[in-house]
Length: 339
Image (tube, rainbow, N blue to C red; front, side, top):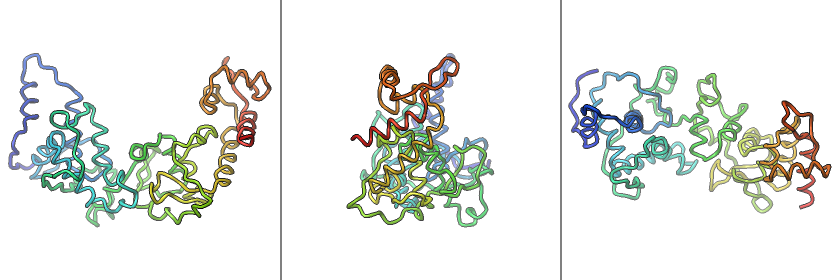
């Protein structure tokens, strides 16, 4: 690493060195983890994916990145400046809404092990707060070789800032991992340099622009959110519905207000899709836990339904009773018709 101009030592750094210099000092590992995370984020402030930093390229401004990392942890003003620059640098996903534009800032705060929230426990400022003018350059030398792409780098490397994994997508949208993985199944979106594990696949968020189409007639359509209880009852997820809409297997469209976080479908189309998914997902026997969760009831209630010949037991495995999938499907469909 080339020599660089020494940065001013921050109060946090001074305290840390004092603690480490003590004879019987015990350093809080989560605090060190927070500092390492901050350094990694300071190196690529507009990127959602950060690999562990295992080496330091020959940058003359290395000490400046370390100094900025401490400021990310300590200074609400620097955080406000960073959030403001995300709105400038991440315009390519502005059509997805504020959560995606400010995702680097929000995920950084969510991943802090010690729940570091700035000096004196203050919350970080929004873009409305007066921001300390601090430039956040993008340093692509810290991106691992497995993630590099010559085409992206030839265009200045700005494409990296729009990459998202299934895990980070779930965190931004608030979906569970199962629903988020369903969102990207098949060829709904092209994976960038596809890798072995589905959770590690990377996608360019800008692809969503091509799948967000005109809404159906809202007069005879309903808005469907990820927390709709019907998904749980019909043994499916919001991600599966979104995937079918993206692939045009189900007529529908995304909400203009919530972007990809809600859908508009005609009511009968939604019910038709739910029923088809129900019978597809319940071809085999179901665990009692699955049934109680789907019906939002107790185990005793399931036993009562079996006694009433509404549900039927399947052959037990290892002494654990299971419910026949077909009987469960018929019960759910019949219940929906009665209502």
